[in-house]
Image (tube, rainbow over all chains, first blue to last red; front, side, top):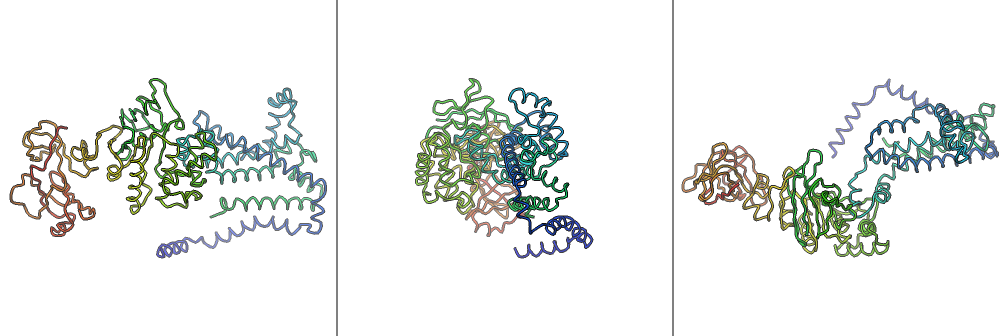
Length: 272
Length: 351
């Protein structure tokens, strides 16, 4: 035992990166830390509460929470069955389907917004039907915000849950089946509990992504205060209008949320 | 009463007309080398794999018969399955694990728990109901797995290498325990194992599966006296030779001869020599033995007081000697040695 430890320590020692790499790494870390520091240095600590308790701010915050949580719920409701099918069902075009699901992760959100508009806008080939049949309009509505956020957020949940479903020991499901459990009950009572950590991680990631959504939202749903103006949009607007203090105050809220999500996921993502 | 003929292809494996028959109250062991299809056979009986041809019938109920389109889902079969590695649900307590079956099969919440508690008591682990599987010892987990399989009151219980997860120290006591429970079990039990001791301790009948086919069926004594394949001979620990009987013994493919006093068999035949009937000498033995072969020691396996010595000669042979005679002879790997067998100790029968 002690011999192994000694060997390992010596290995780490000889494999230490050279000084140049350490210097470059320090520059990179500064690059990540500097914006955060800037935010904290310039924060209007004295008037922070005033900035945050302005009615428009509260409204944006509320809208952001409602829409991002709704997007997370939709991501779970549609994403878990989708992940299940992608992980377990052989079908032609499965690779294509998986590529399609991952596309929003790499697609510029603005492009996503335009594309959503062309499909779900009033004249879009699906939006037209929604309007005709249900009188449902998505663009420039809160529902539109939720749709745009779900579009960019769901892939995070699907990818995380699918990976978990692939790695779970399927013989547990066999065991449940021999005990008399049906497919859906087995998924609910055995599979989901086994992959619960991944499901929580995927949900948190998709929620964080939805909360920060900007490009697709502003393109597809516009920037209407109280209706479609979420936190990121409000921050952008404040910043554009020269109200830097307001922008910083709102930003600090999102920073706090991001840190909380990271903290919640630390076991999964940050443990080296 | 279990009556099954299994025919199914899965990848490289082909279960080719594997027949398994057992009366209620008896235990069948399926033994065979790795990849022979033992686990697949169990999975077919459980309904986790569907047959292509053949049938599975239990107490007159057809569980699977593609010819007539009969099929029961695993959960609709009166079976209990003890999996290799046990596969207790890690997120459920011991009691909830055992209650899972009754609950899934329609019992109410409290009735399922009561039933589960009864099974825990019956297996002597009623104090563990609140534990998580991760907190159990190997022997305890094994009992929980058995309780979970039996809690649905099955008429067929399937056990896949039930003791393989245990360390060598706890295995004998758990094996005795398991044998006792299977003895009192009213239905049919099918145990997959690669451990001869386990097969002989638990089963009334042993089915030998090799490469998807049944090569032999019988009880332990029958297998020991008349092994039909090299695998069976190795499994039961005897020397088996295949060759041609010519009225004076057996001639092997390499031309070597094993002299037997039994002269009744002619043609393709098998000869069995028990390792205890093989004597080892450092110099050519005098006297009566008709079979004397010179060779070298290939390797030495101590098994308690007895030691199995594998000798490389024109007739490769395993001898079983006491530890003291091994020391007396000074046998090690590579030692030149003479092996002798009396003609009366060679059993010959038709292949």
